[in-house]
Length: 93
Image 1 (cartoon, rainbow, N blue to C red):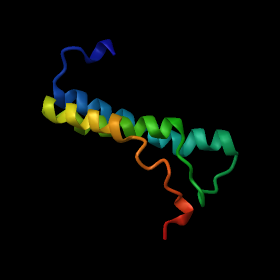
Image 2: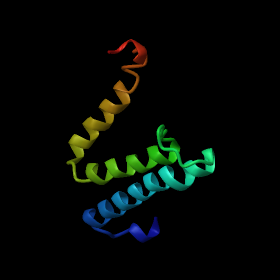
Image 3: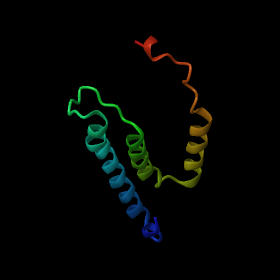
Image 4: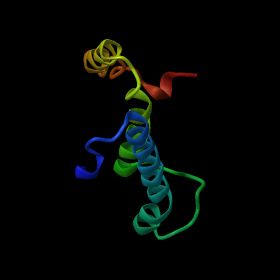
């Protein structure tokens, strides 16, 4: 990440957005084909690269938040990440 030192927020945001979307694209094409050896997209499952890509896209927007809002968002994410562990998806309508 040495090339990102001294860059503006806009440049960093653009880097995170494009790199994140590129990872999502790779997950849906090359990595998916390498795991399943077919091109049937009736069921698509996002895995690790998918999650990393969308996380980078989210970071591209979060970089513009004020530090206190970002701290509150981060603490809320840490505090409530297990909130829906006991919810059964099959029981929801």
